Image (cartoon, rainbow, N blue to C red; front, side):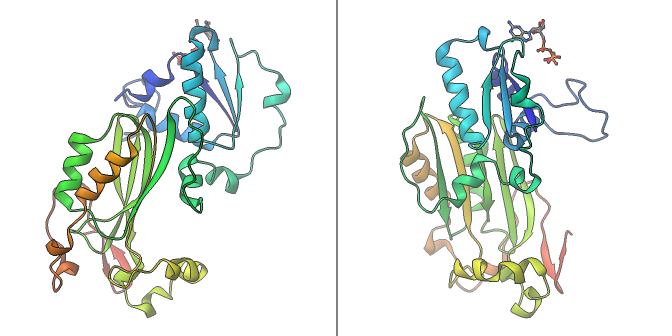
Length: 279
Ligand SMILES: Nc1nc2c(ncn2[C@@H]2O[C@H](COP(=O)(O)OP(=O)(O)OP(=O)(O)O)[C@@H](O)[C@H]2O)c(=O)[nH]1
């Protein structure tokens, strides 16, 4: 799959709050995707990225953009062009497309799968790190962080998280530019009895992997979010995220599994007789 990136407008579009509806780019009813969602999907899924209008940007801006694209999709071939003059061999009959591979090609997935975070040479300050913890985020503190203090240096962040207010629910964090979203990813395996888990093919197929990361208190619940950005201050971000976690003394040891009300605008998911239900 070939994606053409407009080098001149990329960062402007990336920070734009506009939706596809605003730009009359969709006929789908209730399509509330933002331009930045579409841009990110197309960049992360591509095998070949044609970086066009390079004549309109400085060498420095082009360098930043290329480094950012490489972090968003490390496996893609990036071809620079002006007026889309590219060698047809680079984009036609390349035989590169493979759906399973494309699904896994996003830089954030690659970052998650790395054994250890080995410091790399940062080009133009573009870097990535994974924030991991077993303890949940305190619902109010993490809400305040993402809605009021989320660093503008982060270009893309994505991963799983959980909130002290919703112990059964796995949540997905997804941010690209100015578009921040949290969605339900269903329930954690540990929120149902073992017999119930074994009725799911996805559990049986991945049982070893799931159990290898099992915590004695929290089971498979975890926060695991990849951050990709420019000039991010990793140490400060890590300590700000740590400060959003529930403190051990705040965890009511008898009652933490019950949860409580919070202001996150995501429908709750609970487990009922082995079926995920959305009340
Ligand atoms: N300088 C320069 N101008 C270009 C280049 N490619 C396209 N343009 C011009 O940019 C203008 C808009 O063209 P595009 O951005 O390709 O058009 P588009 O993507 O169909 O239009 P939008 O959906 O509005 O972005 C036209 O006047 C093109 O001639 C390029 O590489 N360099």
